[in-house]
Length: 230
Image (cartoon, rainbow, N blue to C red; front, side, top):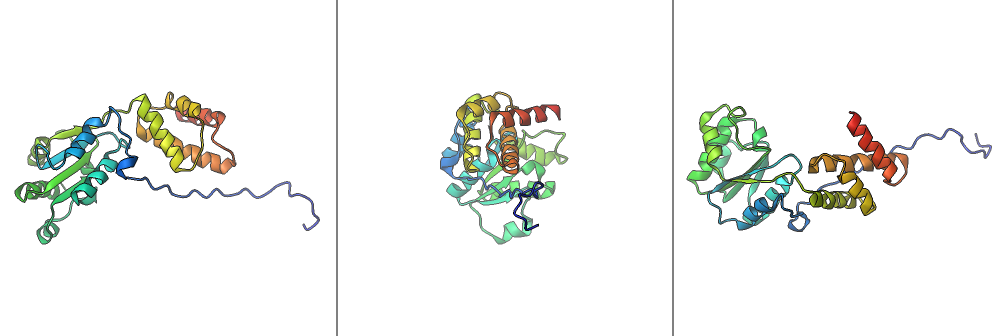
């Protein structure tokens, strides 16, 4: 200690992972054939076929992004995985309401009341869900009937072009510079979902930060092999 000799066993540096907040601006949404119908329906508001709309798509497909775009246009109040109670609805005036992850809401009676409230008061209602309404998911038959009456805008699995564009944006949001060929290499080997792309980018960022090295093909191959083994 104090002899000027280098420390042969340096203390490992802790990687500080800063949270990355997604941008839900209209210009940051990546249009593609898989989401074009849903995006067009959002852009067509308020000329919807019904006051209520159900936006369906797999996790990470962009439902929350489209909900946020619509909320700014419609000046809508958004609730995530919860339904406002009846007394709250009675005490406020709304032109538009949104429920994110409606298939995870805790109270079916409250959701049934909300849908009736929106119809009776000409309130626009946008709900997101991971799948179309199915009888095995909902206990209240009347609620299932209401949900099935709502028009559906569906986001499909992303194509190759969207996978690449989304990964490029995810890396850029984390201030990570990667070569286009590396994105091509990864996109061809991942499950075809934006959720898988997001999980990979997060893991690559975390590993690169911990190792003090850039995201290389060798690191990408290691992470993909690890995912295949798990």
